[in-house]
Length: 238
Image (cartoon, rainbow, N blue to C red; front, side, top):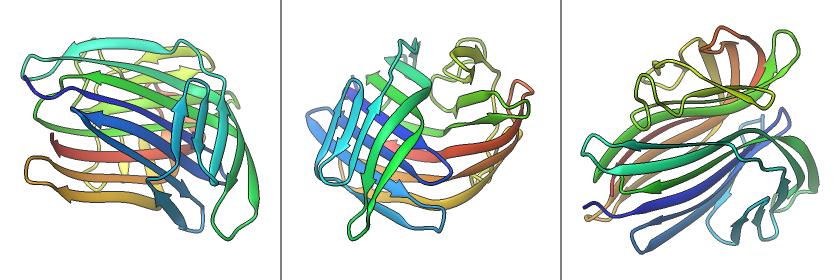
């Protein structure tokens, strides 16, 4: 049986700045991280001071954000190796707080977030591409999305969702460009990228997560006027 993997990831997105805070455990090994991206390409990140709890994401001296969390939606599925994995996703969650980058003034943030809780015995080798973000549809309404290929991605029972306000709609399979410049009908323009290439012999991870903007059409046919979020590619031997 592969090791148990658990994580909570919070991403907060706006036109002024974007951030993520993560707390994961692979077997007995903990990992924590944070990142803040700005439109000018600035990326600040680190691994110390992370505190994640229901309704709040904090990084000591850098980030303090309150989240109006909801029940989200839950999904349990089987991996290619037949192991059980679970996730809960919340889309378009209101997020308010303050960010202070080293050497800079404090910045108030009033935005929306994606919250990802996951748990299970993911296959020893797991590879996926993923996108999550928030935005404004062509008619001015608020939307959010969670799109994936490679994990929880069965044709009829997947974690792929588009949120219209509080209502989450499942969408069909999506295709990602190999360079992460596009997913389905959404074109992506990066601001800055958090990446990692880790080799610990018993565990390896090749990871990319650029922050940026989206334009185009959501997989349910909704025109997207403005969108902010992340793309991700993760190839893990864990």
